[in-house]
Image (cartoon, rainbow over all chains, first blue to last red):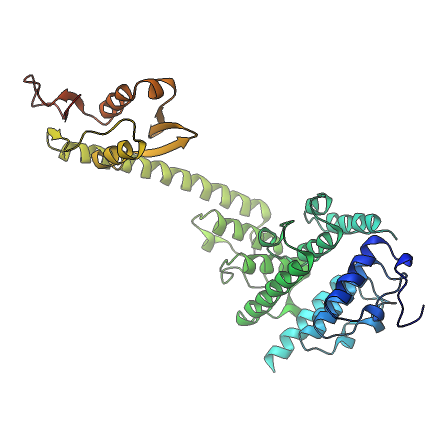
Amino acid sequence: MEKDFIDLNLFDTQQQKIINDCAIHGLDPTSFANPHFNAFQMQVAYHALREGFDLSQYLNDFTCEQLEEIRLAKKSGLDEKQIAIVGLSADEMMMKRANLEYQLQKQ
Amino acid sequence: MDNNKLIKQFVANLDKKGLDSSLLENDIFDFNQKFVLYNAIRSGANLEVLANPDIDAYEMEDILDEQRDMMKEMRNNHGINPEKYNLSQLLELNDAIVHNLDISQYKNHEYTANHMYIAKTFQIEKLEGIDNITPDMSISELIKLRDDARELKTFINLENDEQNINEQSHHLQNNTSSIVMNMPPNFDNNEEVIKFFNEINPYLVEQVINKNEICFAMKGMIISGEHAQENPKLLFELFASNCGFKVTDINSKNVISSEKQLQCREM
């Protein structure tokens, strides 16, 4: 798939909706517009994009729940690499994020 | 994997943790909204605010993030170090925070998630005795403590009811033996009738309006229905009588001074 052309026929309705919503809001969906990613992964990636974060490097390796934790870590100003560890469950990532947020606040 | 299968997987994940997944099985929400709700449930967020199909999924995401910020801030303010807690405990604390409950009483990590959950029910149901919850109590002891607190609350409510009744009697006894209404109620005007009864005895009167039918309820006794519709004067007399008055015509010469009288012109 070319970077600047998204063939919507390759996507299901839900994925198309997110790509369209992203484009309508003036953001570029090409970083997550891949039929290989499910609609919920794309939803988190779009949410992150709205906040100015690009999660595309994590889309291949993490589930939508894990991506949500990575997004929240970035939003909290943490180094998301500390929780974006393949093998950690989403819940483990959540606890790790909460700990890191607490430590950051204490500083 | 298609979206339906993913939602089923979310449901299974929640069920495995003993969290209520029913919202995800409700088709009033679209896929995007269900995903936000799923994230909300797994974070212990306040679903009463979020679970509204009229709220767009992206807006729901923003609301959820606001709640998460609040959880984080409150946990920090209370000095809660997440390292000392397990996920279930954190979810209970998060839930308490987003429901504006004071977590001081049970924020200590020595309280299990079950202790926290039961302590929250004390706050929600406004039960006495939350101070008696200690980390060493077993679940059955906690439940017994709560049952006792519920019983006590019921008893106190009954006592308060009795006190209200005494106040009503006192109010009636303090009334003059004869009340003359300045303005007789216009029985075709519900508001005027209600105002009138409220002036007679504010303790007893509560209004229940159902469609076009007006009912006057007095401590569980409702005078209503066909009689009220057909004969408002009868309703008035019944109600006045239940308030402890005898209804007589102001022009009547046969006034018994020992009885409470409600004298009405034009009656």
